[in-house]
Image (tube, one colour):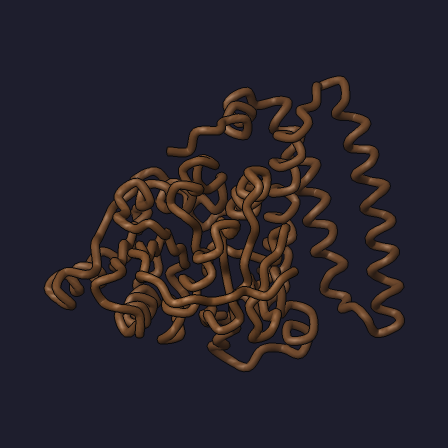
Length: 330
């Protein structure tokens, strides 16, 4: 890690990209927070890409048409999938920097002003900052103790600015990236499709591609966004789904790194079962000494069940296998 030396320079134009699906109750809050940025109004745009929402999302976004001199642009992506929406919006973006966020976030007023500074360092390809929770109700103790991390797409490494040679936790709800780098790596990998379980490694995989090009990652602690956490994300059901998604994501990543054959599949399943027994045993031990919650016991089951199902689908379903192998998401 190394400290950033910030210098004054001409402000880069930033395209704020918000992909949205079925979040009419939240999207207006997110848009409003970006309209209030302390960053020069002439130096950024807001693009909201509707991923074929069946609710009132379009009506909410349309209400901004005649506000702020048309600063908010509406796009529609019929293909279901957050990666389709983000990549489609990027193709229509005017900015030298692309800033991605979700439709359930609230930006600090200085978010853009703070995060753009780090890109004066030409080694930096991608940047993020603090992602803090905005609880909609008081969270259970187990959530506060064990889930203030990637399980809720949160990241708090303090208020400093640092550069890393690896991804320090750059999530798609708070991610700035050079536009040329974004297109060079081929955009976002598959992620969420509608309200179903994740099917790929999303921004994590894209960030690995950025790293492979030799770029660094920046964490800007003064660039802050708040992630709205509804009650449904503080439940056992959500935890299980998150572990299932993580299992799918890891299978997607591993198959792309090293494809396997039908003959090799039984051996992989045996390894999963052995790892499952070891991990559950470890989880129970950690619980017995007060370092883990029993809620993670079923979650671990969902993770390994997902891995087995995913690999089986890769072998048995040619269409799905081609989906995993695809490299062109534009």
